[in-house]
Length: 291
Image 1 (spheres, rainbow, N blue to C red):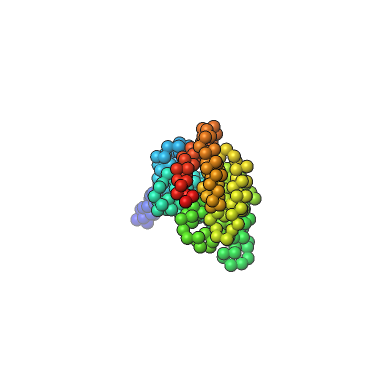
Image 2 (cartoon, rainbow, N blue to C red):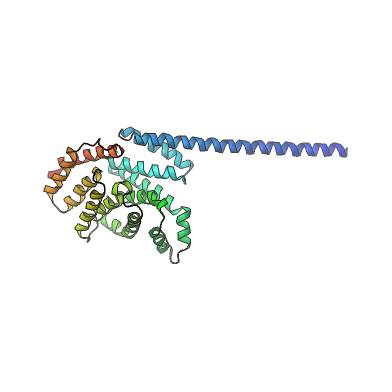
């Protein structure tokens, strides 16, 4: 009887171990399948991004990346692409202000989370003394090169989200936005075709009390560093020349963009085509913009 019970006990134990191994093996297989599926989704989204000249491609990419982000919200490749595609859709494809605002907000929050939860950033944060706000700003001012894409899309989306808000909100965020973008200038000033310079060109045309020539200075830096990117010239006309009420320069610069061949530079061709359309729209609105 004792011998029988011992055999039964060992059989039950063996069954449990086998069952546990099966469950563990199935879990590993499931995780591997999920990871492969995420990789597939990201590849599909990247292909759609590469075809962004078609507006439907960007909307499909954002849908796919939204699914991937729900599964792996800390995946740096997903974050970098998602915050960029959200901005693109908000910037070029949506006319509804609420929809644009929602896209910019989402893009900002996705990239912000990536920065604030990054291990390198947390190490900087934990080595800083002071209150929470000071520690965050201090860590951002020393952020490493690896965080440039997430920081850029965080703050760029934030700026365009704030552009539709009262000026006081831009003022309240000024220190944060300046620290992040100045850090990007110190690390990679040509990131996204002089994006940090372009950012300040827009930002300083939208902050009360700031000398408007600061906007001009940064736009000129953006153009001189990346002359073939139409966005630098179009945004200078839209923000600086309009704010300074310089209609002749506004018209000249936008007409120059309209006359350029947007297909000459393959890498930036989609953006240049959309900025060329933006230039035409601004020219059509000149009487309203310079009343």
